[in-house]
Amino acid sequence: MSQIHQQTAGAAGSTCPGCQEPLESGDLFCGACGFDLSAQPVGSDDRPTVAMNGSSPAPRADASSQWPIAPDVDSSDMPVPAHLPTDLPVTESSGGELSPNAGEARGARDVRTDAPFERPAEQSVERPAEQSAAQPLGPPAEPDEYPLPAPGTAPEAAPAGPAEPADPRTVLSDPTPPAGTKLCVACRSGRVDPDGYCENCGHAQPRERDHMEQELDAVAAVSDRGLRHHRNEDAFALSSAALPDGSPAVVAIVCDGVSSATRPDEASLAASRAANESLLDALPRGTHPQQAMHDAILSAADAVNALAAEPTQAREHSPHQNAPACTLVGSIIAGGLLVVGWVGDSRAYWVPDDRSGPTVRLTEDDSWAAQMVAAGLMSEAEAYADERAHAITGWLGADAYELEPHTASFKPDRAGVVVVCTDGLWNYAEAVEEMARAVPVDSAARPLHSAQVLVGHALDGGGHDNVTVAILPFRVVPQGAGSA
Image (cartoon, rainbow, N blue to C red; front, top):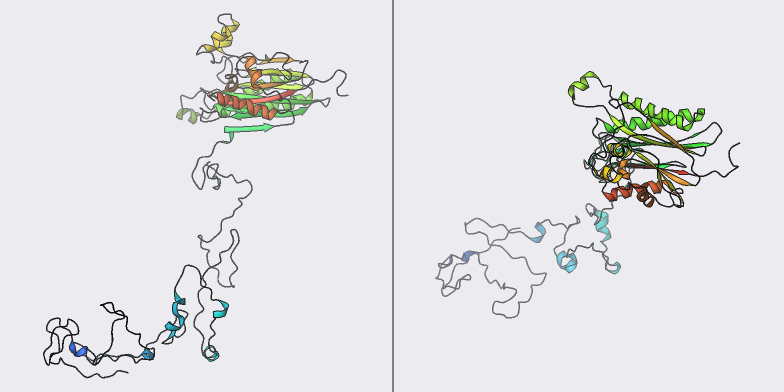
């Protein structure tokens, strides 16, 4: 409800409430500051809370004091509306009505803090029964914390209704990839696509042949790319077979791709597989191990030669390619015999367990250095110090000279191990004494560990080439013992 207030003009001898300048009789505005004298309530005893001269604050008006009455017109001579407390709709933050004195009733408890406020039990406020029954208290208050589902748990099912597409931002990923899925070696979380790159971080994955290990009951092998080559051009094959009398035969084949040839990694892989399959076919039929090794080398040569038979259009696009090529060395332990076969400069060593006997190199390189030594033209130290030392004179491949497989058969009188390796190892343990020191003394009992140690020896020495090592333990059969 609006109330009317009488106009008040300046009286003689009075001063302006705004600037304290003297007023003249009948002034409606102060001549100095322009104060509207008609808007000044008559007899107002309102004072500031704290006096400017430092005096004590004025006593606070009682809560029951009357609402101040506004003037009926403002400076533009328009009526000024006035409102009473009951005319203003006010609600609490919870949605309920706010009484005129609610602010004083709550006091300092409405201060917001970061921690959720918990009302003590003795200070709980009960609303009048008639109020709660008459009308609802508004929408429920928002909770201070929203519980989140545990990782890996699905949210509660919503009521049945029309299906909506799931938001990809809220769908939980499967923490366990499907069986057979390869994970990235860099981020350990992304899956590897068929092209060999991580779908998450894009990191190129190492090739499967960069590092390979295999262990059978009586033979083990390790192959590594090394520290200088961009791929592993070595390959190996391990197997075991039963001879006609039931005794076991253990086989290890190691091949080294010729880096100057085309596709040397394919050549070494094809040769190792072909030789291994040939031996597994021949040995159970009773073929002598040395003859079986000779035939296996010929089969490996045929497999490498087949790689050179490319379509004509492939030759047109790469006219400077040569035939794939590799070297081969293999060993068979069967019936108390130790058989080796080779073409090229990969080697086989005999290392006795007790080291009381001599360590022996079982193969002779098909290389320029070996020819110089065999012809008596240079000493072994001089020949292998020459830059032409590792130029091979024999290999498997379509452009090889007349193929001459080398085979040899031994019958050791003591237990030991056969070390079958590429030049990636023996370049760092060329002399037999150096190889004996590099081979662990427990190689017969731990062939895989021994192969790992020897590969590590080559990597520690510089790892300039691919490294492949196979370890075959040889056990002496006591006199009078054997198969029936």
